[in-house]
Amino acid sequence: MSEKELKNVQELFIKLRDLLIVYGGKYYRIQLNIIEDIIDCVKSHWDNDKKTEYILKKYKRLYSPQGGLSDFYIHHEDYEERLRLNKPLDEINDSLWNLIKQYIEK
Image 1 (cartoon, rainbow, N blue to C red):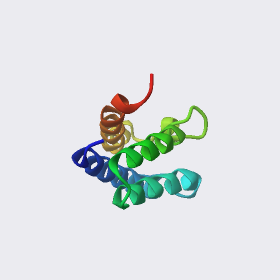
Image 2 (cartoon, rainbow, N blue to C red):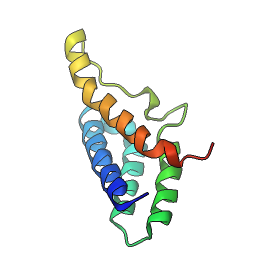
Image 3 (cartoon, rainbow, N blue to C red):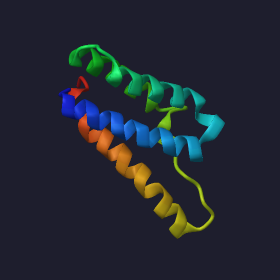
């Protein structure tokens, strides 16, 4: 990933972490640790290829079929409020995928 892409990834993971802290709490401690690892990786002195490799490995763990963030959403009794609360989460997930998908081995 380029420096610009890495910076975008870092910003998106910071936003995701903040949402997860507020709405996921203790139930997503493992995912929060992975996100913190990714944020720290981007800040590290590793070269961009090593950072990219690390981020991809951790990303796959974050969005695993069971127990990952694939099933995470923000619940609220009011439907309109639930849509409003989940919109930023959906935008973060979509943006992350659009940045990362080109680097994932097919």
